[in-house]
Figure 1: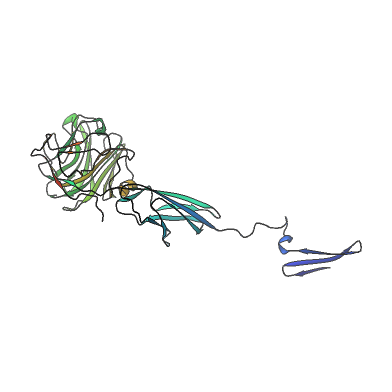
Figure 2: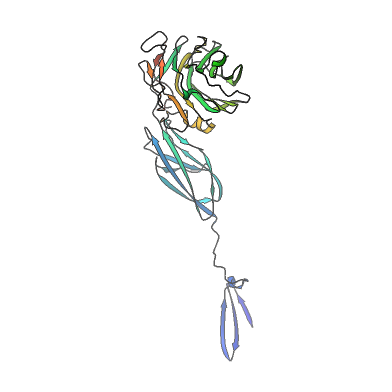
Length: 352
């Protein structure tokens, strides 16, 4: 005879004249024996690590936000573990950064959370000083760095700078150029008809691309151009503004590299202020351009070949803080001369 009751089944019988009672839980009735796995864990955890290097670190630390949830405090070089998270992919963002600090890599980023496991992500940050000075060009002043192998950018490169145009009615104004006549033309970043342009040359052909948006007179703006095997992109204030193909790979020339004018033709002077001029032998990503434009670099970033902070505030030379020599000479001669641009203060980037 078998009798079933909640949570148990009791079978009573006689074996060899003896009375035997067997108790079986409902779980043991399933084929294959008892289920000892317990309820499945459908939640996961995330360990977030921060490492910060550079200048003027934020002692207040940062905050980690997951899918727009509540912030979790973390120090500028620390670890926090966030528990009981839904499984699947979640958006993780580091917030509360000072304006002179930026994250290297994606922020926010997507992280996979697995049930019963701990996922990991590390935010690497760099903090820089704020700019204390800039150079002001009046339409007849300039700076030059001569000719050097570091200026011979070819297959992949990036040029960027902060500029504050003062007179956009002037049709063409060169910012950074290594351009001459005939075989001496290489590349140029310049303003034409209020827009940012880039030109490259393989004799006898020039190729050009321009921004869709016009610059704003009297305001600081960050401009950048990237080049990768014939494809160019122009960024304004860290946002992609134009993309184009068909650019020539620049030829190698002996023309001097100049700021604020076109040396061979003694024309096309820039009216306005310039700061934080950078040249790279890599095509920077949109995230890299946006992430670093609002802070000064440390000078040891991979691919950085030229970095004129333009922070001296006085004197006739600005040093290349990428550590490769190639300092910038103000004007046409060592020492004061009429072609020297003026120092202005403050520059960009600034704390906002």
